[in-house]
Length: 438
Image 1 (cartoon, rainbow, N blue to C red):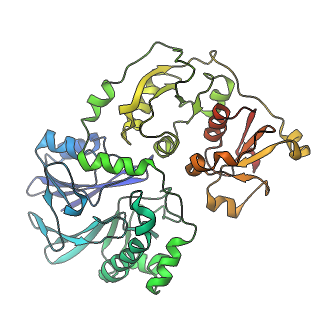
Image 2: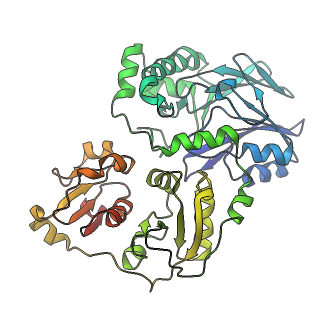
Image 3: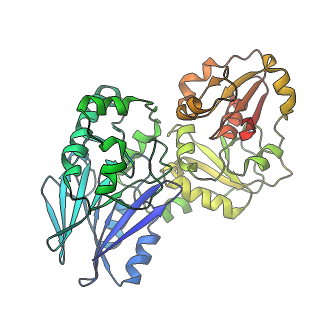
């Protein structure tokens, strides 16, 4: 028996292979859309991919389960509560899958989502590991993740289900059992996910605050503290995973390549993935800068409505190609009107503001702080700044006055995204201080 973890650092996503070396067969758990790591692993061990288990309908990345099924003939497994629209075998409480001497037992662990399951892995009589999806993370639990418009009305129900799933189910496993979640450190929708690549139930019981002895009411209060806004695109991604998408290569190859320095119509949306310095030096008027860095996918989905067409541009064909693949990780390649390369000498520069001059004339500017809510509480270089976390921009942009220039700062996060967004939408000059506001 071999358990292999695959990490996508850009999405803070973990997926897994359960391999029976004797049978030369393997089952994948929560695969991403790029299937090359799984094919490479299967080839290394001359193994056949016979099954794919989804612990739930993920809302932060598109899974490649449908492509795997079509390419390998693997059986897809998921809870019937997911109402999946692809051929699958439903998994319910107590169901078991066998792979040689390996037994995978299904536990229903709702709370993060109604259909969430955990998978308890045994080898012989020994309980080895549990794959927890987004229910139990390293150092944290997953928030209730009900799609809009149900999120508000079912949040409390989700909290109570999550308490039962973690405290009364998963916490009963032996301390030695390895804990394998679907997300790791940097997961933007949770507070304190550990940077450890592995953990066990004993360590989680000792150090995970959410697993400490507490009442159901106290647990729900903990989840409600510093509660984050759920980005709208997550419901869209759930819907994509419910039906499955075409093969990644097919979708990416269908995107049109435009000539270098292509000039879309002024009202068309352009996402520029170059580094902030290059963008501010010169860019297409009205373009929004979303650098190709960790969590690019999250920021892109938060920024753009899932029905909104857009262009992608970058500094080179290679960078644009990488951006397209990462865009496809959330299913947004379907809305690309085209992609093109932008050379440095083309376009307009961003306005420049002297940092010292700002501090001497704060009254002459509107300061906008793009830090997330947690960061705003820890450190606010400009206490009177208007807080505008990117995930809330659609509902709060009207709070920004337009009687003077705007300065965007951030102690952590995408100030360049918000400054370029506001430059596109507001009739005043917008300056980006980036992280120099520290």
